[in-house]
Length: 168
Image (cartoon, rainbow, N blue to C red; front, side, top):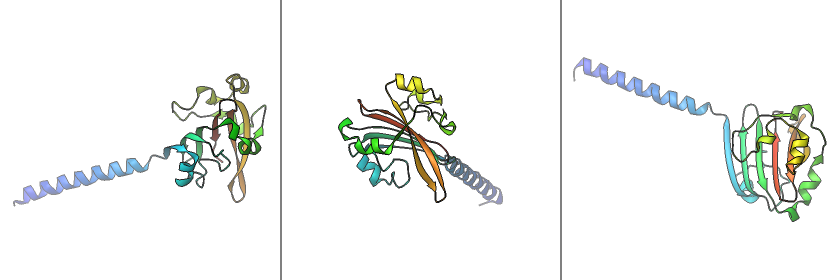
């Protein structure tokens, strides 16, 4: 093999390695994740409750659970359905509100069809109530020394719910 062809092979190998490295680094740059769970049991098996993507107080009947999240900054959007007759634990865990705290008034959209447009941007509590949902806030531990607020919009009659947990 001549030294010219050896140099050519080394250059091709170098280009291939650079392309592989570029694709790998580009893949590591994505801080978003999306998950779907047919049942709350599936979410538990996938450790979604441990990861705090899905609250531990979801009704046992929760189903069709869509989760979209950002790892940095940490935030999650979740849509779910539940049997209205199986909502006691959920009701007890939520604090009803007429207006939202400042940290929950502006919700960025996840860019998913399952997330309603009236729960994006500057939230209008009247518009949300007009859509048949009631607003709630939950304060959850974020770290050992801090808490984070999450907003819930629930349609109790139809058994539909949405939650958004912003950066803590």
